[in-house]
Image (cartoon, rainbow, N blue to C red; front, side):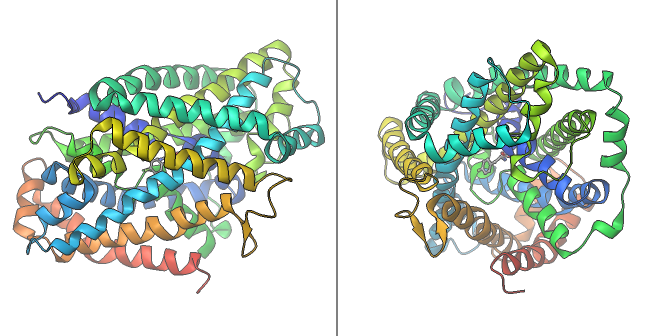
Length: 446
Ligand code: PFF
């Protein structure tokens, strides 16, 4: 086996590590809460199955066939070998942009790991004040945290696929599973567990409107790490004969299970204290600490474990965001991994500093453009513009510019031709249309 390629298990673990992140444990529960639970989850599951998984398989087949960076793989797989497909490589930049603010958010969480050893806030007002103070005032700490997170990401990816990425996933993913298992077991013992189950699994379709559908679709993309070239780049390190179809299904199953488990844990805890499910993005930073404070020392243990789980999940996602651009510079500019890491690492580190300063009281005004601060601009540019554009390009590319027989051959080596034909139909028509609707809506055109 090549030094810098995954084993099949390593690939599944690393791709699952990429998929399982803040999107599952922080974002999924709060948007599920906002859209009223059961019906939203049902729509989300359908979005994962028919749309997310389709694009996941698409990135996997391009990556595994190309065995190179995003640009090179697109060109080599295209029917005409048209060199212009190299421009699809733009999507690797998205990972760096997401990583900039993702690292800042992981920094906030690091602060929560540390402060959870001390006295927890007993009132929502105090918890809200703490959170606000951290992100708008405490620039010194935020820079230290961001530096620690960015430094760890850089340290891991410098070691390469096998020694860095595969290894860290081998360590952190089981630890994450263990912590979540513990938190779930505790949730089982609480009376509110059944309330959480019925909130999450009793669909009330009156809550579903266009916004909910789009939120479910957006979440499906984000949680499966699609439209950034991450899955494509990881698949390029997958042995050529490995079963990418089965691996893709497994990653989607792991990712979805963890989102559901995180939801069960968080809603059980929230309902135990009679708290609201629709607390928005502050749900884990404001509502949860107050609940934990009511549980005495056990509350501290649970708080520390919970925020550590978020860090572990987030780090394995963070390393996957930088890898597409590293591979791009290594393959196309013949850079060494060290050089590429310094270049990409410095870029996201500096952008991260800009993002964190833009939330502060002292520098916010200078770093706000068109009514949005730099943090929100990076979030909006990446998840609302660049990710959907990349996803559309991936669909159009495979649906119309790659030899159908070749794709059929690759799929049917591992699965039935019915699965292939369903996938092909989805990639040509259903998914691009769904994404275009999502995209236009995000731009406010609908
Ligand atoms: N899937 C990650 C999460 O759910 O937190 C986020 C993510 C990772 C998005 C990697 C994009 C990416 F390339």
